Amino acid sequence: MTTTLLMDTIGQYLDRLRLPKAKEILLEVKQLAETQSIGYLDFLERLLSEEVASKEQRRIEFSLKLSGLPYTRTLDDFDFKAAPELDQRQIRSLFDLSFLRDNMNVLFLGPPGLGKTHLAVSLAVKACHEGHSIYFTEMDSLIAKLKSDAAENRPRRGRSYNKSALVVIDEVGYTPLDRHECNLFFRFIKSRYEKGSTIITSNKSFSDWAELAHDPVIITAVLDRLLHHSIVINVKGNSYRLKGKSLKSKEVVQTI
Ligand code: ADP
Ligand code: MG
Image 1 (cartoon, protein in one colour):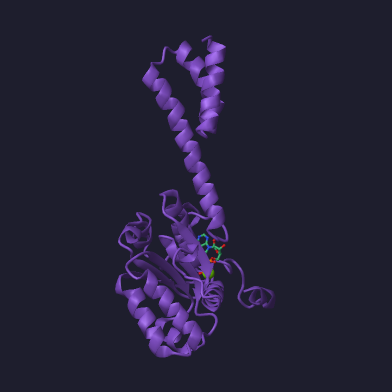
Image 2 (cartoon, rainbow, N blue to C red):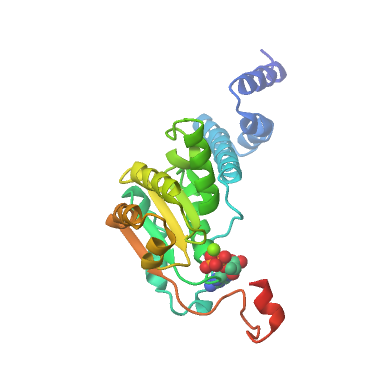
């Protein structure tokens, strides 16, 4: 076979095998191999490593898009100087993701504007990069989903908000829960117990959770499951959103 014919045939094979990046760079890598006398194995390695990197990049982009994350922020975007009350070492150590491998939960508790959601999002982004499945939801949307699934008698198992290795539930404690909602939330937390990790952010303390719920006994059972294997981070300080602004300003207060 002539070189041109061979290149065409290889291009068709790469198409059929769905290796678009390898096809895209085939000619370039072949020419490089010729000019730099690169061996067969190195040639193949270069072709495949670029294909793998490109597929991995696509997986990450796709997963982040489907994850429900409100934005993608990382720990690098987090300014520890603006959060002097946080234990920087403890926060940084979360990013080794050992909590995820141990199916532990992380709870960020504290007033608004202190970076709880930012940190939870950053952990989810890191987990996604490391190949874990992630799902982000606000508490209100989670409850709405659990209710509609329960009403239609759909199994929760296999649904992405349940099966993901890491589920972030943002803003727990804003809306009171009635008895049915408490029950659904308990079943959800129970189904993930020791099977996956859940990150929760809340502006309420645990005692306030019980007050917000119609059924404090169930909420105690929820906390029992959540806290058994967990890391609780109490976030204190001044709102980052209000940094450099005077709290006396009416305008600022209205934007909180
Ligand atoms: P919370 O969830 O505690 O209410 P957020 O995570 O939503 O707070 O933070 C509010 C805004 O301030 C976000 O845009 C977030 O990225 C930013 N922010 C908060 N704390 C920090 C910080 N220490 N460094 C950088 N950005 C921060
Ligand atoms: Mg938040």
